Length: 478
Image 1: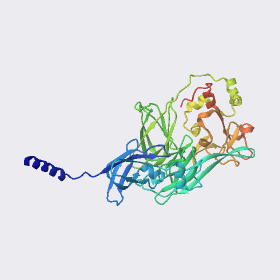
Image 2: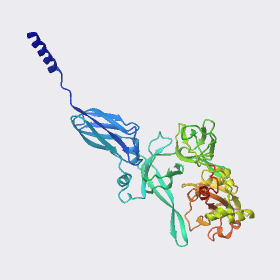
Image 3: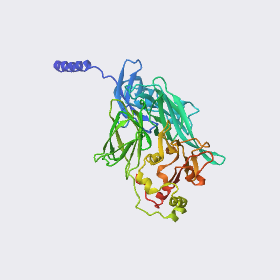
Image 4: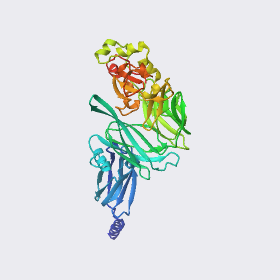
């Protein structure tokens, strides 16, 4: 009996000697980007105790999920950090959570909705259904990527109703950067095509084509390059510099695409991708510029590219395959029935008074932008200004003038009634069926002349998309 009791007491002693386990819980959740409408992966999430004595950190997975185990009871602060948050202007993404003695506490860290974010960054007057903002930092392409002061301008084409019909104008917003290069351009339209450029004195970026998303919020840093060398080549003014760009052209599944025409806009440099999809462009100006790519059977690709001193820039261009219709011969009568009538264009083409580009000729040029049609055209010059490419016509005494521009018979640019805009604003290249070029005012038909201009005219006829949709015309070979 004594032995039994002793053993029992010894057992009780062992039990009594074990320390009691601390009661803990689990904290889990998701970090969500309400602007991109997607989880935010690779974000750093911190869990901080109320007295700031304990700080724990984890990273979110590809689904934006995170978790902390063995969390003591009490009030904790959960916060997230990510470059995307800085770019959007989200200064703090955090919330308090109360943790009990056991179980799991779930929480969500969500970027504010686009409307709330626009109101926070730009004010309530901007936070409507149609306006947003551009945000980023202007950095030096030759100064170890440090922030630099400068100015940023965003422009877009607007159509207004006035006496005599619709007219075009170029709306613009221009802001100075902060001393560290940070900038916010408030009031840009949502779901619109913008032309963006930054500069400081003679140093500048390229003219960037930007499509603002449905949210209206576009975030990107811009790199400012030194003044590029201007070279006249084939009547076009192009820019040169010390940068190189290497890259690959691939399909959506990652397989290489051969024979893609790749170009950095304003440089005049072009390259064709090889069998492995690789390409190389050199003698490029430093800074942020627009990279364009086009290939037969694929939709064109346009995106900004950063060319930094001392680094070979790299880019992977993903191309989307197009679905083509079977070849169909154009029926003129059927075309007229759907509102596309090129009879006058065809009659003038037979007269020989100007130069004429039909669908076949346009496809042969394989342009990425409308202005590409005129880079190597005799008597025309493409000059690059602050807002983008401007087409000029050579006059008798060697000077150049800005031509009148017509789209479907309606004047859209070219004299003192219109704000001058480059063709890439005014014309949808994928909808063009024909182009008329009149290098002299006297060669142009009366309807394509103006009393206030002594220059010639460029006339565009559209409707290709309509004909492609109903099967009258084969889809453009891009």
